[in-house]
Length: 256
Image 1 (cartoon, rainbow, N blue to C red):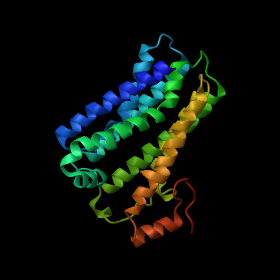
Image 2 (cartoon, rainbow, N blue to C red):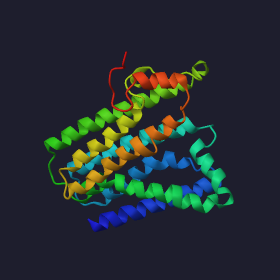
Image 3 (cartoon, rainbow, N blue to C red):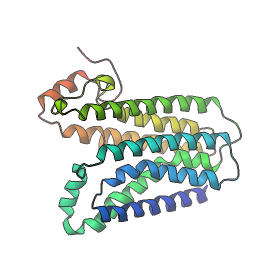
Image 4 (cartoon, rainbow, N blue to C red):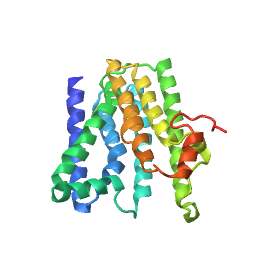
């Protein structure tokens, strides 16, 4: 198991270092977001093809991670194409000034590498030793994963389509899944990793994997997700009304 951890850490650091160098060339730190899903795919497929046993759980996780990662990367690259750097990264670039090139490596790329290592723990546990059979927990995990995948895919598409229309500028998106949750895409993302954790229960040392869904849930609810995004709308009366009637995270019927 230690070997899996070390190999995963090395792969992730190498990947993020290459992305960092690319960000220096393009002068766009925000490209790291697009490579987030691809990094998980790289770690997963490396362990899958380097293993001697084609166990069904290893194959299942490899398929799910690849599908999730390609969808996420495709969405982010398409969404960001032709746009300026994300405001978060632009603000950091302004604060760090001429030292941005090296500070960004530690505070953006290596930080994301550490997060990727922890969040990929269910994958690493499955790739280490998962057994020859699938169990009930695997199918429960797949169901939760699929719910999350559909939520974030549909929510991202609905929001992207909404923003593409000039007439919607300044209007709060409260249609589709966004009618039931202010952040249905983040709800979907947490379901994806809780599902992945439940799938890993059939593997050796699965309890370590609980760190992954706990971390992603905390990040999306308290750090880089819900909290950070909603600060942008402080003082916006339209969003305040939307906030009053719509659930923050878990999809619920809107309040009257």
